[in-house]
Image 1 (tube, helix red, strand yellow):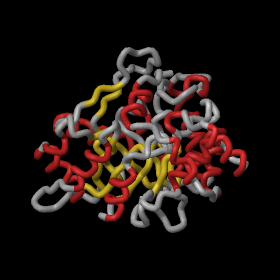
Image 2 (cartoon, rainbow, N blue to C red; image 1 turned 180 degrees about the vertical axis):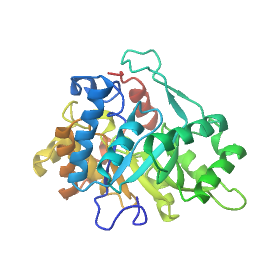
Image 3 (cartoon, rainbow, N blue to C red; image 1 turned 90 degrees about the vertical axis):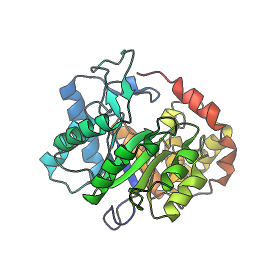
Image 4 (cartoon, helix red, strand yellow; image 1 turned 135 degrees about the horizontal axis):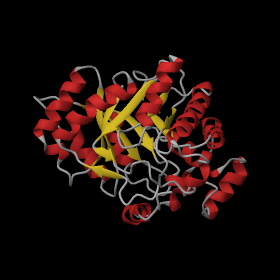
Amino acid sequence: MTSSLLPPHAPRLGLGLAALGRPGYINLGHGEDLTDKTVGAMQEHAWTVLDRAWAAGLRYFDAARSYGRAEDFLGGWLRERGYPATVGSKWGYTYVANWRTDADTHEIKSHDLDTLDRQWPETLEALGRQPDLYLIHSATLATGVLEDVRVLARLAERAAGGVRVGLSTSGPGQAETLRRALEVAVDGVNPFSAVQATWNLLEPSAGTALAEAHAAGWAVVVKEAVANGRLTGRATLPPALAELCAGLNATPDAVALAAALAQPWADGVLSGATTVEQLESNLQALTLAGDFSGLAGLAESPASYWRTRAGLAWN
């Protein structure tokens, strides 16, 4: 989300559709935000949130094949409205919950060439256009995707076709994964130039590696800045965060997002709002100025943070 991806003066806040494209997600209280979980009702709801985001000046929108119908909702909205938005999407997970919140398995991860070749045309059809950013969804060293020469060659083809290719990261090894990606080469050229990573006040461990990616000219996008609801009014807040919120007269989600926006390497930060009300609260982050250094003590060990996240219930 550098200046080459967004219009001049566009806010660095974008909207992710992980919680808008499917009836179940792991955000705290997500199930309570949706009164009608039929496909038609959820599309209408998603379009309402998207309309408010656009009216607020947001121009970057993020989806993925595994976000249920997120690409379809986003693509339909863009075609109906005719907006020239910047769009990111991701491949590598397949949604398998069949629109059930209580499914045993919601998504299946596969970072092989067959999945990439299947999901790319699916994304094109759903969006009605190429995405501006196309990312490996939650790349890790364990999947071997950054060593798979066939996958890397295909992604290099996407990059040559005008798509900004990169990866998203998750888990306690985000920094190591990103640094490996910075070293990738296909015919002497790295096809990657974008990363979307988890960074928040509880899990800032990837910060140094993200700064390195930014210095290398990559677009750096922050996801999960409110830690799936743990840094919102739906959770018991650490005293330091509650005190700063009171001092700034701001909601905790806005402070958490503002702390992410304050990182000099962050080209953009995603709101994961499920409702217009949550989005309105998130938007406060764009006008918050403060000293967030006093919140450094909130950081958990990466292992602890990701263990807690893995235990969050789909709802």
